[in-house]
Each structure stands twice: as C-alpha cells, then as structure tokens.
Image (cartoon, rainbow, N blue to C red):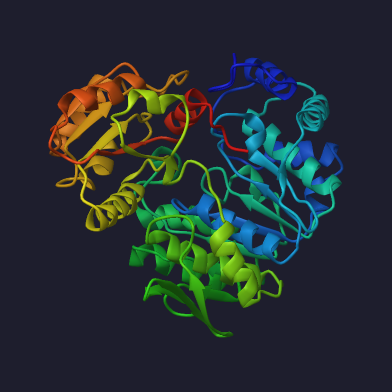
Length: 450
C-alpha cells in the first residue's frame, strides 16, 4: 500500500506499510501497550526537552504552528509532532535546528527509528499510531532541542502521547463535537477526555472555548489538579484593531501584525500560543511575536493554491483555498473566513468537499448556508471510511445547499467552469471537509508540505 498521495515509496513508508499489514488500523484508546513498549525502549519519553502538549477539537495544528514560529523567532530549536500527515509520513516529525527553521525528519533516520520500535515491540498487539508515537519519543529524545511541541492524536486521556507526565505546559484548544464514538456525544464529555492531558501541578493554557459546558469542565479539572491555569478571554486575549493584532496578558500588551494564517479564529490561536510559550518558561519578546506572526505557516489550513498542476482545470483567475477542517466547529470558522473574504471582494463561492464517515457532514455544510453557489462532492482516495459522493451530496441538500457528486477534484473544477455566470468575477473555490482530501489535492497539485 502506497501512503496517501505518494508516487514513490520511501524507505520509511515501506516500513510503515509492513506495520499496516501486521497491526490493526485506527485507534484503540489505552496507555498499557505504549507504556510497555516505551519501557522496552528505555523510556525515551522521559528524556525529552520541555514539552508543550496540545489537545483540542479544533486549532491544535494552528497553535502548534504558532508555538513553533515563536520559538524559532527567538532562536530556539523546537521539535514538532503533528498528525495526521497530508502527503508523506515524515511530515509528522519536524526536528528542531538551533537558530534556524526545523526540518522534516530525514527519511533514513525515520525508517531506522520505525524499525527499532517495531523490533522492540516484537509482534505484540499494538496499533500503528502507538508505534509511530513511540517513534516520536525516540526521535525527539535523541536529537537535542530546546522544546518539543507534541500534538495529541485523538482525545487526550488515553491518547498514546499522554504518557508525558511532566509537560512544561498543557494547552487545550477549542472543544466541539467530533469523534463521538470514542469521546462521547456531549461537549462536556469530550472536554473531560481532552482535560486528561493536564498533570497535577503543571501549567495549563485554555484557549478560546465556544461552549460554557466545556470551559467549566476544563477549569474545574485544572482546579482539582492544582494546575496554574490561564484562560482566553479572562487572563489573556487578542483582537484586531486598525489592521493590527493586539495581544494582552498579565505581562503587558503587544501591538503586532495580523497573523499570516488567514481567518479571525487565528487571532485566538496566536494568543494561546504566545501564552503557552510563556507558561512553558521561555522569554517571549515583542520582536519574537512580530516575527512569528509574519513567518508562521501551517499547510492545508486555509492555504491558498497559487501554483500547481490542478490550477489548469480551474476557471481563469479563480481564487482556490484548501482547508482540512472537518467538523461543525471547523465549518463555522472556515465559513466566517469565507464571509470575510466576500466582504473584501465579492466572488461566487463554490465548495469541493470530501469527508469520512466519522464526521457530521450536515453540521459542517450548515455553516455555509447562504454563502455557497453550489457544492461538488468528491471521493477520497485510499480511504475505506470515505462518504460516497452521492450520499455526501444528499447531506449537503439536507443542509440547504445545492450539490452534485463528481469523480475527482479536477472534474469538479471543470464543472465550475460550466456553471459560471460569464458576467461574474472569477470564483472563489474552497476544497475541504477532510485532511485526507487536502492531502490528495496537494499531492495531485505537486505541492506537498516541506
């Protein structure tokens, strides 16, 4: 099996492919297996640089990117673990470089770490995600760095990354409904699972929370565990003023450029990152913040495609955005960003959407009611969990949108040409609904993350 979007199988991908054939796919939430494996490996998770541990339903990746940008702006080296990858497996591991930009892990180094972990596991029952989490700890413990930013895979309490017992800071980003079969069908239940990354006595930063029930759970957990906590909107905040980002906390106020990542939701994400890096014990200067706002990057999240092979299928002058947001909460912030783009320059908006069957497509689509001309629903390559485009189109109809199934993203782009009003401005096109679809698009476009 070639990993999603790859045209040539790397050495590490071949090793992971072997594991996929031996071990169960998906998640099996428990810490027993990963704890046993790490013990065999010499407990590398206890030999990490200071850890910024990040959980939440939405915004985890963005706050991770802001934390990395801040640390690198200050000359610090920061390892970064995220999941899933978009095109290539090694995107999950960025190795910090002192005084420079962290680099995606070298394929040979990655492959060797995968083999070591697989050998240590000795064929015992485990998931591939747990093996890859152990690889994170091997890589990050054996390469010196000033910090390690580690994103939770699923939930928090029983996520394989939660063997970290002494984080420099835990960060809980916005919580909404997602992964209900694993985490519960109410936001307070999901919040309790995410709060599981808090450790007694260690700092926690709570990002913007839309739901009071989630915030109450997070704050009560922090209080019970005697965690020094800071909360967005109470202890720190950020807002736009005269085209600038104003950040404020107990240490003072900073007047910054707007973040390079588009969307108002990124203001709160940037604020959470600034407060988290401070809570982790790093000195954060206004110069660092300014540089980070301008240099931050996070592929596949409101990323504009300005070049690549797919653009030949799009209408001339089209503005094409990709975003992997896939739940109702993400739909709301992405739709708000599209509405803001519309205020600045009016263009007809089209969606090209693919989703997997653990998501709520109707809830996602409802956020776009009144904004979208038409939705084109497409399959996701190599995913047994994809929602059939016909069924996904019906979900869009249920949300009040006009929709049509298509075979590929390229076909959908061609179809947009056919329905365009010749008198209208070139369209704005959002391709999204799944990180897996975004990975397909970046691979097909020839522009994978670097």
